Amino acid sequence: MYQGQVAVISNQATWASETYELVDEQDGTTTDLTDPLLTVDVVVTIRSLCEGSSDLVTASIANTKVSIPGPGFQWQLEVDDLSGLCPGTYRLGAKVTINDFVNDIIIGTISVLDGN
Image (spheres, helix red, strand yellow):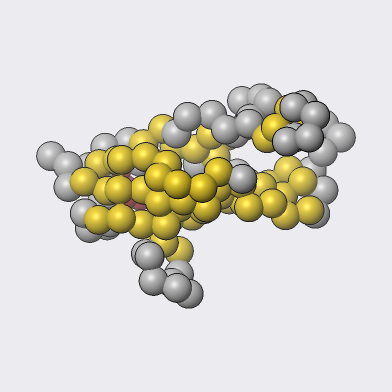
């Protein structure tokens, strides 16, 4: 699991994340999320820092904002997704579900700047 600041982004620009891979900490192997034998779902959320806050922005495979280029995953959020965020710090989370087993892959923060 990754913890810490994930990125500094603009609320007036497209944000294409880096690709994140799932690596087994014990043996160093990477899980290939494109494996047809796996049922995979990925959901990335942006929330305020307040406990119990609801999702302000959601990226998922279902809404096509998350892609799996193999073996990892990445997301892309557009200006329309981000323009409602005021400048500040937000919680970013990424959950990956593989064959009904849910993993918190990222529990971090992002800083949002007021773009042009």
